[in-house]
Length: 321
Image 1: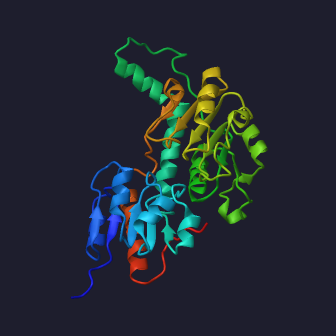
Image 2 (image 1 turned 90 degrees about the vertical axis):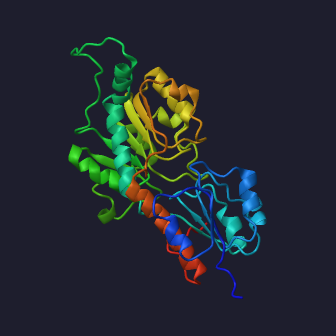
Image 3 (image 1 turned 180 degrees about the vertical axis):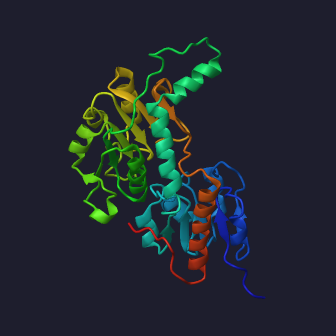
């Protein structure tokens, strides 16, 4: 009897049409829920797997690798980020790690602009007012917001998403600056100027955070650095953990910031109560890549990585420590 195809574990329900491409080639166990697998259930499901398709809620560490055993060949992370994966521990055991870059750039940049517009024009406050049923009347000073045209925009993290945010700024006639670990060549900078971090903060009336989370960037924007922004600035955070959420809430409370918007939280699904209490905080439940087309593309890329590796080929989008 021929050996069964290599077994694959998928830890979360995927977008429509994605899982079928995987089940056509391999034996697949899928946790068909919109919530992540409980840790004990995940560890119990790992032994003997050749591939695991994970999400950011799945901690891939030594315990995970021990449970999976020596047959594991690839962990395909359904995300651009991979701070949930101990890449070095995987490499030591010959386990490949992949992510899903590129395919969510457009949707995430669009979401950054949606949040930026909502924050600067106080849309959250306006909607909450109407839904509350409180009496209201238009007035010249009613819910005044901030215009973006000509306003300096700073981008922290000028990767694919940061570059897409910069491209969209052209339509608002906004001067754009950015900070990266290194300056980009002009053809990739989208007309934006590189600045040291302190200078970027001091000159950005609007700051969009798109850099990946790492040991170096965790709480990079703490209370001290948030205080370097011009008074009345707006912060939009698309990456969990880079902005200190408690410090962000405090800056809103004192009026140092005009508004803020956050799409990705450090301890999801928990959101700090101090941030929830801020009327000028626009809060979204991790919707940056939440379009049908993008989630299908993310799932499809994770599947393509698994199919390539289990067929003896190279991964399409490998992560290296």
